[in-house]
Image 1 (cartoon, rainbow, N blue to C red):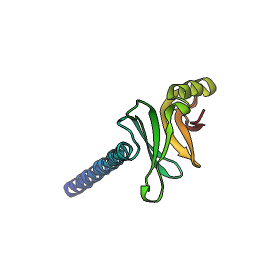
Image 2: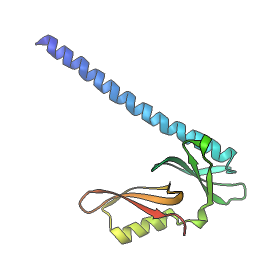
Image 3: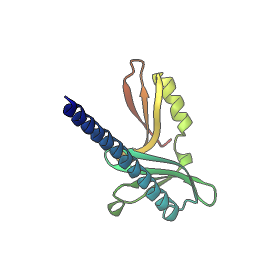
Length: 149
């Protein structure tokens, strides 16, 4: 009986260690992706400061960086995960719908119980806002809205 308890304890510790290690590896990927995207945005995108970062996984993975250039104009850059075979897309933030406008639209149109996340992405080569919210039945809903005005 004592051997079983020790064996189960060891297996439980190994499992917990595996879960913790997996979590940290996953978080390290996000941090590395953000650092690389910000470096590209500053070097190649013409930005001098960064205000927001989104990691978007749709049909393709993109890092989305929002920041300002040296004249104070705010831009959004969509940086593909496979930067070697694709190009960075750049757009003035003012040409798109703001985050607060999207949140207001979702609240008015769907009356969500809770908005979980709001992030910029790209779908079929078109910039979008992806809003994740919980409806009145606690279902998780993903809604896409055109980013362009």
